[in-house]
Each structure stands twice: as structure tokens, then as C-alpha cells.
Length: 530
Image (tube, rainbow, N blue to C red; front, side, top):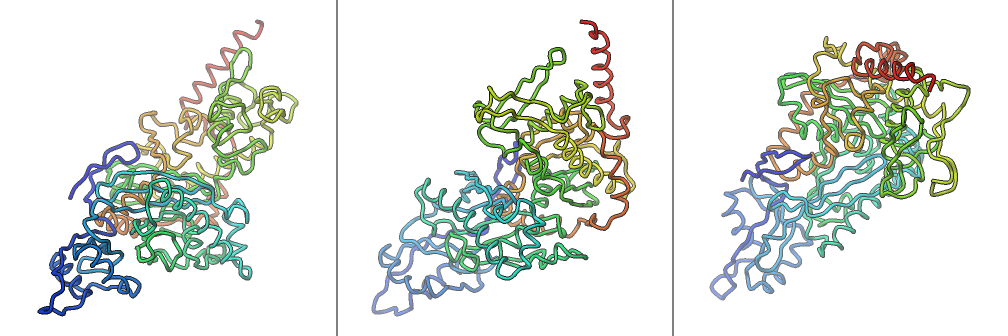
């Protein structure tokens, strides 16, 4: 059954064929003429509708079959794993319960977790929940956690912290929507390679040692109770496959949502979270790479940084004449700090107003810029941007555009051949593209070619939850992509210094920024005496 599903702001046609399915059965009531067992009656009823194969019934469900069938007067609804022939029984309910068919799509990020409660009858999102990954208590960055996982008993601690965080979101969705955990029969998970290893409790330590080898790329279907995921214990869990050591199923999800792999034109997909992940290609070929590019954008290395939550400065504008700062906060409350989108706006505005030069150095003898004075803040202290903050962000954006340069050079392309630029994740939801181009984080493309696709990780997980064809498409993608390892790439290191300018050492690669800087310089010359 084909359905049009709204996904990252556009309609996608999806063949609705979820990870699990529900079947209503009207069984022959028992009598003295037919002593066939309850399990066999259910198997016969299911297999008539699924056209053969074998149906497995777990012991825990076998133990309550008779009671449920009797309560439903031998009319029951069964939930099955969506194997082509037969499958496994996941749940049995008395009466007609086809309308209650729920799945879970999960984005497991290094910092933030997102869960969608999905109606698998129509593909729509019933509810969402977000939270923070409690693993952050062990270390903000992924490398710290990978190194910690090598120590005795620490892998289980990291696994447990993540599962507690995920199960907390599930509990919120279940309570809010008046469900039982048995009502959720499937989950689809997207995340970077390390996070999916942690989620499954699998040793990820090979990811931080040459040759940076994952334990798995495709773990297959897992039963929920083996993972301690608090949905139906017999439910199925699908993890989108990884591409390489630092390019995971979250990026595969982004490709699926953007449909980059269906276009003739060369396009780029960038997802900057705690790591920066980049895909370059089209329908004929794709290459990928990743690096630890994102902490500055998530607030990890900026003095006044905070996550994108209430009180965070999300937008910044500086008046060219008075140098007065105008800002907006999340929740329209007094500012407490600045999140990634506000930081990028701020650095762009500092550059355009001549407060910093293209190296990111302040234009007069100071070590910081007061963004918000103490009397306007929520905590009574100045919110400042320091010279160190600017340098950290320049290194971050330098890593991103250097990685893109390495990919382009590796396949013999140049910037002019890029047609579309897809920005994914929270990075791609909130950042002002104009500011991102100004500092050199985004390429200088026509702005209509810069497409923000939001949290494509959880959206891709939703598509995988709902469609066998999408799952097949995902596996085809994962096998098609060539992975560039940057950890030992000398060319990356050679080019990295070129990215340590705003927007870049090659200003001609950013013609609109060059023009803006020229216009601002002319403005200041005209008004120098006023």
C-alpha cells in the first residue's frame, strides 16, 4: 500500500510495509469434534493469510494463548514480525485491535536523543520526545567514551547510561499516549557507528585504533528483550547499517531523506553534531568521510556556550553604525548563553562589521567581545565571545570545508560542480544559511540550492520502520558508498591551514561574501567621520 508521507518538509511516496504487521483472526471455537491445540489454530489462521511459511511462538506468549483467546471469544488480533513467510508472534490481543499498531523511530545522538511514536497504519507521527544522552556524564566527546569503553566494566556502564536515557523517552511517550509497552511492536534506530555499538552493548574500542575498525556494520534484526529496550519484549529492533568507522546509519538516513542518491547532479550532505559527517555524490557514485568537527557548534568548546534550550541566544545581528547587538533567545527569555546557531551568526556579524579580521583576530587590543551586558542576562554576568572561542569555531568550520575539499579532489570535482547542499541535524535546522556561508561553513551556492532537511536521522529511521522497500534501499546505499578515512590522511592535514580563515584563504571561492565585505568596507570609509 502506497502512502504519501510528510518527511523533512516534503512529501515522499512510501510503500507501507512496516517491520511488524497485525492480523485479525476469527478462530474456530473448541468443541468435542476438534481437539486441535490453540497454538496450532493460530498458526493455521495466520499461515492461510501469509501464504505459507513457519510461525514461531515464544514460550512467554504460548503460556497465555488460551487465556487471551477465551477472553476474546476466539476472536483475536495477532502481531507478527514482518518476515515474508510466517514470522514470529510478537503479541496477541483479544478482539479486533488492528487500529492500535505502534512503532518507534529513534535518533541516538552523542548528545541528544529523539524518539518518534509512529502510527504504522498510516506512517504518521503521533508524538515526539527528546532528551539528553546520559553518557555525556562520562565525556562530552565520542573519543573520550570510546577510550573509556576499553577499561574494565566501563562498556556496560556506558551501555546502561544510554539505555536508561532511551527508555526514559519511551516511558514518556507511553504514559502521555495511554499505551502499554506491549503496544509498541517495533523500533528502528539511527545513530553514528559508535553510538549504535554502545546501544547494543558491543565493544566499540576498535574505532579509536588504527585501522579504525567497527565490530559490525549491519547487526541485523534484534529482539527488544535482548537489548532491554522497554517496548514489547518480543518486538523487533532494526538498526540502520553503518558505512564506516565514523559514518553511521544516521548519515545513511540523511541520504535516504534528501534523495541525494537519486539525482543526476553532484550534491553534498553535511551533518554536524559532535562529529562532522559529509557525503558527496549523485545517483552513480557517493563518497563519505567524517571527523571530530562539531563540538564548537554544540557548545563544547565555547566559554558562553549552552545547548539549544530556553535562554540560549539563537540569533545575533550587529548594527553597523552603533555596533549595538540585537539578539533573540529560545523561549524569548533573558539570555543565559549562546547555542550553535547564535554563535555562527555572531562570528559572521563580527567579521562583516570589522570587529574581527579574516583570521578571526579582534581589530583592536582586546581578548573578548561583550555580546550581552550583565544587566540584560539571566545570571547577572556578561555573556562574552572570546578570542579563543572564535579560533575554536574557525578550526571547526575549517575541518568541515577541508574534509569537503579532500572529497572533491579525491573524485576529481570542484566546488562549481556542486548543485545542492543538504544541511542535516539540528545543525541543518536552526543555522542561518547566510551566516554559515559568510564564515565559510557552507559553500557559496545560490541560496535556494542550500536545503535544510532537519533531523534526517530520525526521519530516515521512520522510513525504515515503515517500509521494506526503504530498508532494501538503505542496504543498497550502505554498500554503494566509498568511505574516506581522514585520521591518517596527510592531504587533509596539508589543506587544513587553508581553512583557518573567514571564510577561507581563497576568498574568490566565496563571491557573495567577498562582495559583502567590500560593501561593508565602503560603508565604514564613507562614515568614518560621522
